[in-house]
Image (cartoon, rainbow, N blue to C red; front, top):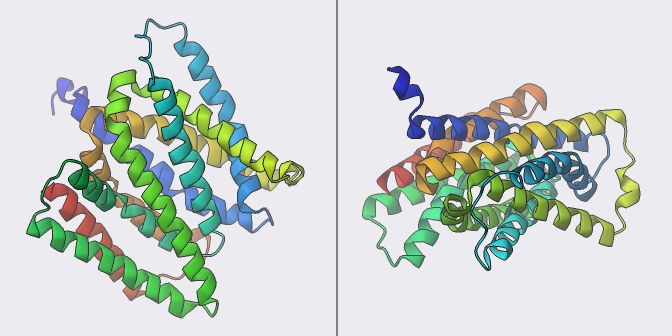
Length: 301
């Protein structure tokens, strides 16, 4: 490959998405580790955003010194809305769901978001979904259902598994909506500015949510929880949020979604290695169906 090839926007976008996907794939592992220390969803999410807040504030302040085109009327509110949709509402539902299900199942449910993006874009643009894409969607959802049923069989508390899966599915729908809506806005206002402003809005939403529930006192935690929350904030939030939005701006929402296929595999094996979560042949088969179906659906698109 030539030197210029390494500098091509498409290659840079692909690398951004892959690294961002890896960081996001570690998120569920760190959350589950934090839960072993007795912290619950909302305080942990608050700590994540408190530790991430200075990074986004610093970027936002730095951006004020740059010669950027002023935001058009209404763009600021759109960015705030998208930030609240993704890293506040979607994250809150995800953190709550992880209290009840394995990190591997959580990542597989989250991974179907590209198929939801495909369906949303097809609906808004009044496009027909091809027969090949429909088959691919059926394969992906069959795989997710297979893993879900297997997780139900591995636990005696099936009602909690059902609750957790439902919460993560709602989180996935919120994130898919964000991806579908954010693509044009990210290109319009600059990826770094979009990320900084949207994440500041999300931080504010999370902190106000926690304060309204009286969760402030629960922020007093052990050093281990603080370290995990710091890793969660920087490695699984700040870095991938900038990388993923940069990648989306360079290669588009559809391709960015397709390139995330490595995420569920990373989480599945890290869950087994670090959290001692079971990996069965049925789970591997289900994961393969999900990844194959999503890849086929987005490639067809």
